[in-house]
Length: 461
Image 1 (cartoon, rainbow, N blue to C red):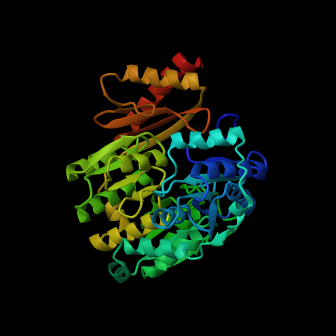
Image 2: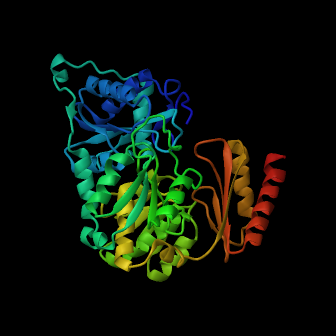
Image 3: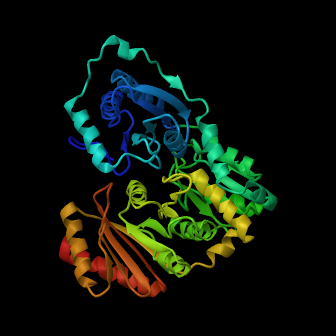
């Protein structure tokens, strides 16, 4: 994101190019603002991924926190969900994670975690920003500074134990699974191999050495960046590939046929499995409007309601917490929330749960994927100002006024054999168009018609 006066936080934390937008001066000042938000005497757990400048930014944030009289505990290198789990169950009032998640290698960032282990609500971010722009700098008596940074040495082990406890390790071990694991040269390397070993899974690691230059691939797991992992899966006859992003809160999966699965597909299968085996959970799932209507078509006949949400993992987490729980929350980008574990995206937990599902059903991943309805997918983005994007959303609502509309984030049109979503991007000046249909011809026709109307009536081009 671009940091501008009056707004620091984006869709998930503060991010910028290291040394340009994200500087130690900003981090120190933000650390003080975070410290003022949590208050003197609060206990904050901090961790980081492998990104360049991570130690510099972390140390600056720690200095700001200590200057506000906060007690700081250092988890070191740790996946974001590992830090979040420790905050949730440990003696902490909050946490700070130094990461830019899936962004390119030159980026780094700062996430603020509330005491429940979920990122602070967006309205609370505004309070932190207010402290930041006011230049909050408490003047405390010298005795307030007697607490030095403490090391939280067991944080990763605590997290791994928790993930393993959520599945049947003995059942998984009996299947003798073989997995290709691509860790994106970052902190997925620290936890997921331990989880797989504890589950008796044979794995071949790819890009599982820590390297801030990300020499193996870009931090974002996509069909393109995971192509080497797919080749290795085919060569080895493996059951699954798992590709993490930079902070390992997400996992993109490839099945035994080498097909990359978007998170709404495997999320749907996992939710059905958990719903079948955990009858104590509320019979609903939460997913962003960018997910496929496959979610509804597959889960509702199984007695599971689908709650559509605005795009963004923090929004999904907070809605699940507000509404008293769910079977799961998930996103099309590979994020999956196993609610009995924690209500945040968790790549290692998703991996373990997938293996549990395969062991429990006795099926391969491709066999389960083939039970899903078939849709053709098309995604586009068009440069657009905020006003142009708003015009496009209003226009699509009018064109499809006789269809079912979901208008919580842009507009999603749901027809009998297709859907199309038109929404402004939350991170760049573009209009995003996502669509699916049961025939390729209909998909291309609908998207072409919508795009032509938007260009003619809202963009003037």
